Amino acid sequence: MSYYNGNTSDGTVGKFVSPYYWWEAGGAWGSLLDYWFYTGDETYNSQLSEALLANVGPNWTFMPKSEVTTEGNDDQAFWGFVSMAAAERNFTNPPSGSPQWLSLSQLVFESMAARWDTVYCGGGLRWQIFQFNNGYDYKNTISNAGLFMMAARLARYTGNDTYVEWAEKVWNWLDEVNFIDTSVYYFYDGASTSDNCTDISKYQWTYNAAIFLAGSAYLYNYTENTIWSDRVKGILNGMNVFFDSSGVMYEAACEGVQRCNTDQQSFKAYFARFLGLTTQLAPDTYSAIISLLQSTVTNGVSQSCVGGSDGVTCGTTWMEVGWDNTWGLGQQMSALEVTQNLLIGSVPAPYTAQSGGSSPDMNETGTPSSVYVYNDNISTGDRAGAGILTTVALVMMLGIAWALASG
Image (tube, rainbow, N blue to C red; front, side, top):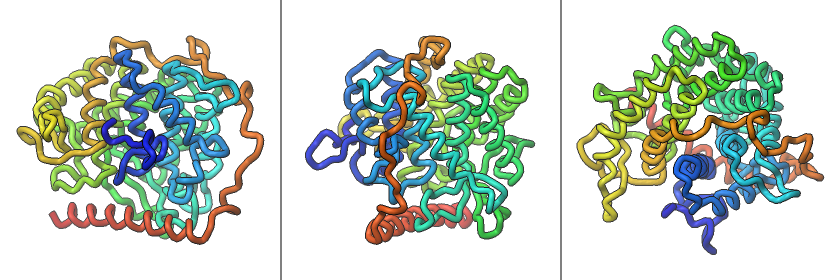
């Protein structure tokens, strides 16, 4: 929370200090929601609730006017994950008249599903929402993983099989375009629409695999269809690429060459979070996953988080002996998530509407009384700024790819 200034005159409610983008703030609030649930510490709950409600946007889809020009499908999904977790964990419901956690999650899903694009590559979500952003012509696994995860969780919570059909649709499309290698359960980054998604960038990121692991566990838990349990086992086996010989997790695509950017330094947080969730939804994975989390803490995190002037600053790589002299929000989130998920066996599994979940759905809360049409209200200046920011992100991604290829 030392990276948060949303409660000051210089900050924006819900956002963390520069250089952390809005999407990572969604990731961080998800970490803090689970922190409360696992430990019972309510210190940050009021700030968490304030942050979520301040960023729902005029359409209650986590598309606030301050962020929408640079927002991608994956960014929106990470805020949707928090509202879904709030519903599943029975986090205090917002006041009457405010958007509710479950209805928020449903509206996020609907807005994402409406962008399913069959014109290029036969389906799938693009990385970017608006065509004036660089990256609009790229279909990436993480954006589709977000849609898959929201569908899987909503299916289990609501009992509505339409969400199962959407989850199957996303998985099947990713398989068809070879973003998933189901022989080893590797999940690749994505491809451009310019060549119909045939030239695939085969970088593997921890959070892609983890989201599909947990999403498959949700679907198995709900449907009891063994195809999902088989996928859980396959994905878990494929994750060995993200652990070193001593059982310490690492970001294989960038950590070894010390090229992880600000975003990528937080990926292990989501990796650990969704590993923990998987143990609750597919209990036969508990021993294997807890062993991996424990070895990561014992052999990695505990000896890394000794840096800085405070003596508790965590580094990017936990494979080195001692602190690696890096620091940041992503590093702290990752260490927190790995550690707190060791408590997963002491808390209830995610609630559903049938097992005690109290968050009302769209039928009970309705939707915003007026709909804001973004395409008609985004200025030329906003578009230019969005293009610059997205170009920076693309250059950073390409720079990492070049370094990995030449290193």
